[in-house]
Image (cartoon, rainbow, N blue to C red; front, side, top):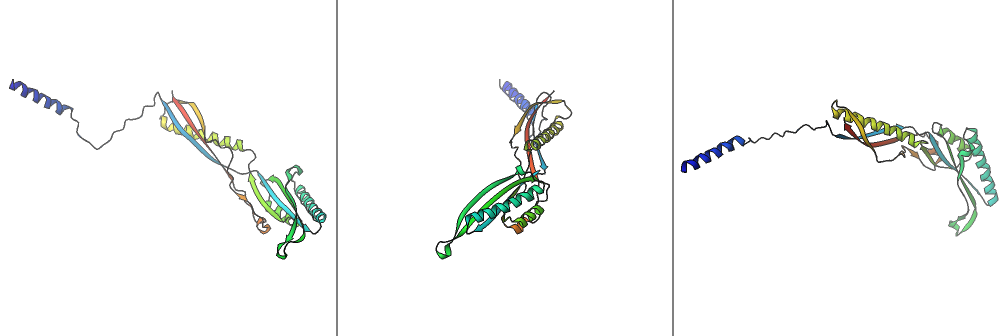
Length: 236
């Protein structure tokens, strides 16, 4: 019986020796199996687009002790400005009144002394972004504008630019899956639009009131249009 136990113990030790694996610090990763699965990738794109429209807001201020005179002088100057704009090829329907005010003026250094009326008329007009706005503002300054409250560049067709960015994002996703698939055939199974934001971000906006600054060179900059998609491809 004693010999039997000794033999059994030796056999267990031999089996233990056979199944033991030496300890190692090296980690082995198995290659992913994609032959019958799916590949999910994110495609992104950013394109630069030049704005095609500029909107300018200018103002005319007139003062007089007589309200009707202040209003008449203001109307005369505004009509002259409109004629200059139309003469420069800006359509009449693209010229609008942005704001109109008439108020009494007081000299508060002498208590509350009435000193007359002020009429303020703000005009807004839109034209091509390729136009020389600095030169146009110089002409309007000579005609009597007293303020420039803003020069804003914009893009008329936001959707067209965004769709171009989407197409580029899809191409980016396809280039990624081609690299991952390693020569295997695949097809698009599902496409999801991420972070939908077709409104482009404006690269540069000018706003101010000093005419000496408004007549300097004005740069229109570019729009940055981004698109992101999530694509699921099926290995075939």
